[in-house]
Length: 369
Image (cartoon, rainbow, N blue to C red; front, side):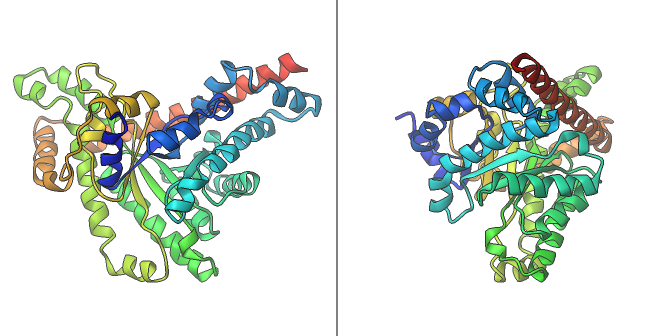
């Protein structure tokens, strides 16, 4: 019974991905169990997840000791530790990749967050990670910053699959999709097989409500209170509307005719930050064909227990979503300021998590030597 709701979600066109990875999940067979029993067909990771894993488990001790003996630099050691786990997870997810002809079964590894403002180094790092992990079902995560956009294009042009992360605004999302088109057009010109290149665009959800709710609380009127918890879903619905528009264009059709697969919208940050909200709201309200929802394991189990699949959750709600965004603007909340704050904070968190991972590895190397 517990898997039925997840099966229903998958049948509605939502790929269920796990937002977590640790060596313990791999050695215990826990990740494989989620794939087999809970319809999990992909994995996303980030340096914070790895830092937590390395700190709280003995599973890394042997590898860390070897890296210390070899006097490996912190940057290389970090890359080796993450690369090892992601390669293993790619192998665990291979049946899902095979079953979907490479669409799913993907595992994401993030470029060094400290390179977020450096286009050339981001591309070089993406190529290095692609070579290091050496699995077709890998995604390289690149942030959707202004500097990230040309890096996304250049990485795809080299035939490398990309998970674009940290997207908050509709304007930036449109730029991401255009960067994807540019990349595939260049990849085709470079002689790459477009059917082997995958991509998702990670559009962040719950953080949007966190920022809007803060501002609505400050306004404090009944009208403002009535709009709490509505911005994130409305924003994501309008993002999907944009996706439908761009992926029905002649430009996309030309790429599709050459074997390309669409860049799917991936709903990220889908655990609720406000305990007053339903724990599966960012899954239930964002059901649409050709999407990915990456969830912590707690949300996967919560949905298996009491989630509901509404087939027209997104496509039936464009008008209402626009009305919500218009009402928020009428209250004086500036959308561009909200998304700018979210991107800035996102990049900061991204950099802090990279530093945290490096510090954790440095400490582990010191203890092992």
